[in-house]
Length: 266
Image (cartoon, rainbow, N blue to C red):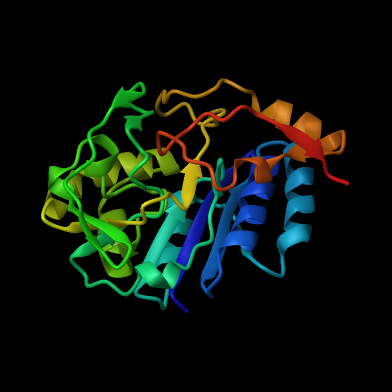
């Protein structure tokens, strides 16, 4: 095993379907992949039942009871040295070998979402962000996290930054949180300790978040304001997100609002 991957999912069954489809297609090595999920309505739960039935042989599904307790347990029980997290409104867009990024020493936080085409920061209002000064080695780009701007200076991202398991457990157990949003926000108090750590990424992103909508009121991040019900309704009518149309693209930001496209599930 190379790493434990944990995807957080709430009321986004159709988006989770696309994420897991992309993971199954693009992740080429062996990892432990968990999905911590929650549905807040019977209609949403029915879709999750269908998604879980589709992927139960490939991923391990954990129904959320208490978000913080569930997260801490999943981290604590990890027998791999490395761990990474993802949201459910996202895709794996290129062939990925997680183990290729898990071989670095403990003073490195690799990222699978970053690539040198990311010149804007979506959460900051699509502001321009300068690329850091890279050292190119073995087909990858290396920089100092403390020198980066916006996404390039944000090592504690819960979308494919690859952490040392013991370190993220220390941070998570020291803060309070009740959702992925407050989890990520509250561990930023530890950010300065990683200024001298190296970042490593591929020239092209392996992963992209797609902020079509929001399912939390904890913070108002920019998003496309597409209600989750739209995805659920299209699913019930026999359609899914045409996730393949976004593969091998070059988004300008790590969170990128692609044009939403659907295709028949049949």
